[in-house]
Image 1 (tube, rainbow, N blue to C red):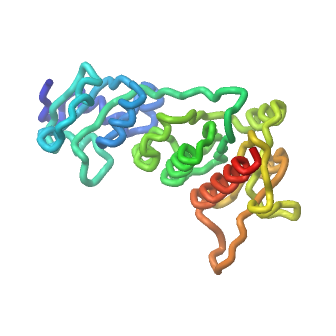
Image 2: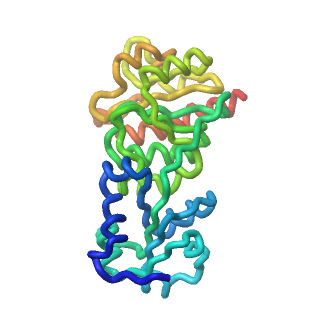
Length: 261
C-alpha cells in the first residue's frame, strides 16, 4: 500500500479533477466515496482503478476485501481525503471507477422510467433508486438531466446504477422508437384527457415520463404519449416534488401490473 500525505501529489491532483464534469467526460472515469458505495460496486465485481483510504477508516473496519479490488491502493492523510471529497465530513474511503452503461434489454422485462430535463441531482438520484426498488427494467435520461456521475447524484443513488440500466438517449428519437416497438408511453400532465393514476391500468411494458421540475414534460413529448396521468392534490400544496410524484406513480402503476398479470 502506497502512502500519500501531500496535496501536491500528482495522483491526487489528477484524481481531484474527476470532481469536474468536463474531466469525467474526457476520461470516462468517476469518483465514488463511502463504504456503502464501494461495497455495492464490489457486489457487481467492478474493478477499481484506484482506492484511497485513511488510517482511521482502516482502524475502524475489519473487512478488507475492498482493498483487494484495485492494484493501486493508497493510504492517504485526512487532509488529502478531504480534498478528494465533496462531503463536509468524508467517510475515509474513495475509489475511481470507469463509467459503465448497462444496455437496455429488448424485449423489455418490465416498465421504464424516462426523465425529461430533470436537473436537480437529488431528484435524479432518488428517482433512479426508486425505479431500482420498484423493479423497473431501466431508466432513460434525456438531454438536460443532472450528471449521474456527480457526487450529489451518486450519494442519492446509493449504488442503484450498478443494479439496473441507466442510459442517456435523445428523447426525440427514442420515444418514437419505443412506440414503434409496442411500448405504451405514459406522460405526466394535467389536461382534459388526463386520468387519475389510480383509475388507470397500464400495459405490462410501459414507459413513464417524468418532466422538468418547473416546466414538466415537454409538449413535444406529451404529443407522443398514449395516456397522460396525474396525482390529485387533496391539500393546499400547489404541486408535489417530482421525485415524490415519480415514486407514487412508479409503485402505483407497478402494483396494477402485478394485480393484472
